[in-house]
Amino acid sequence: MTHDGAQAANTWVRSNPTGSWVIINGEPTDNTLALGTKGAIRVIVRTTGQAAHSAYPHLGRSATRDLARMLAELDTLAWPTDDLLGETTVNIGSLAGGVADNVIAPAAEARLMIRLVTPADAVRSIIEQWANGRATLEWGATVPPIRLGALDGFPTSVAAFATDIPELTNWGIPYLFGPGSIHVAHRDDEFVEISALASAVDGYERLVERLTSRLAG
Image (cartoon, rainbow, N blue to C red; front, side, top):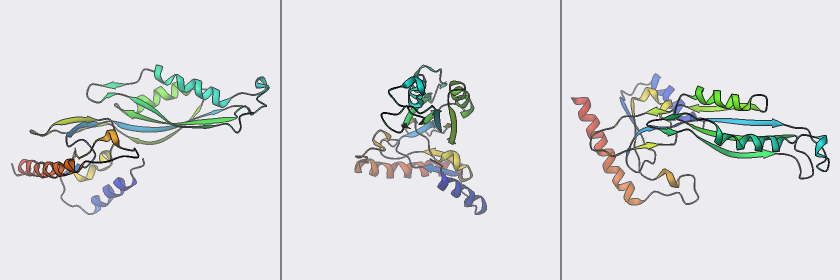
């Protein structure tokens, strides 16, 4: 999740002004206007051990055991919350480590994705204190949480996912609206119902009309 395309589009429009004063990002919001979206930050957590014959564990140190014990602590940490966006959540996306079942693991890593409801620095501080002296950290891309606008006549929601919106600042005031449910995203049977697509067409038309009249006023 590096948002390369959004960043390139943002750079392009700075040099090629379109006169755009609004951008509607078409994410799956069940045809509601999102009042805000969580941000996201990625981090790789790495532990180091000492390889040894597994029959003699006292001769080594297991990086996989150390990492597993650390990860079990994540649910006990005091994560930030927000009145609109809700709770910070942590996903342990992947795990890797060790070389064989008869060898004490010399190295292990976990890839985490944290959904932000506050500025990233708050979460960075929590993770750094948690890992201090026990693991190394490699921080990845960060997307900040963002609050968005509403319009009369449109139902609203709050999105727990992150979007390209923070990287499209040169395109105008952002709105988030689109057909489909995020609850089926990233699944083998991901889908959008045809009726939802048809409803979205009407929704986009009403959005343009409402925003255009606001500009004219």
